[in-house]
Image (cartoon, rainbow, N blue to C red; front, side, top):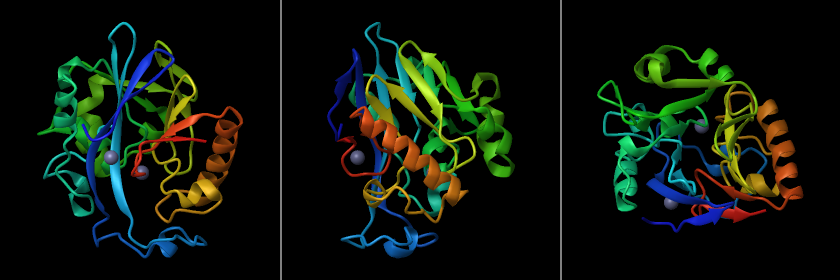
Length: 246
Ligand SMILES: [Zn+2]
Ligand SMILES: [Zn+2]
């Protein structure tokens, strides 16, 4: 376990550090091109790939995102595979079969690939929560490699939904059509709503790999403003420190 848990509204939230590394050359750009208009202090973007384990007072387990997956993952072309998510879970005494609910913030290869291995679901007892818009926009390899093996375990929601006691999801489109964040108490697990700290200073800064950069910037600006107003803490996918108080 590389990062320490926090407790929010009676739910223990443990960051699981699936991998750490730079983006591979297949898609890497200078940071000022990755985030046009930004002036990053450092051009070395070493990404962490975080998933989050939520354990409520009754011992129910929810996992938010499933990381980059194994050597044969679709993320292997650009992310530092293999991910170590199941080792991180084992370090806190959890096996994949213990997970009751998986929230996939979106279907990008570094967030969802760890949900399936060898054509079979990794979290065999878990419902997998996705937004309707994400399922409807999936096609090709994403559909074949992820949605087909998970089809009997999908729990599709639209917009805001309570997916486990005290745990909500919220539709935050732009990075992908059905991107969602997860909320517990004053914590927001933000997926790829915000990729790099430069977007906290200016949420209007685009990210070249957002599907719809205008919508993503609008969503990011609105959601971060609302989270700031409630002095929320964010739990990020790719920052080096998992938690940040806004
Ligand atoms: Zn980390
Ligand atoms: Zn993404």
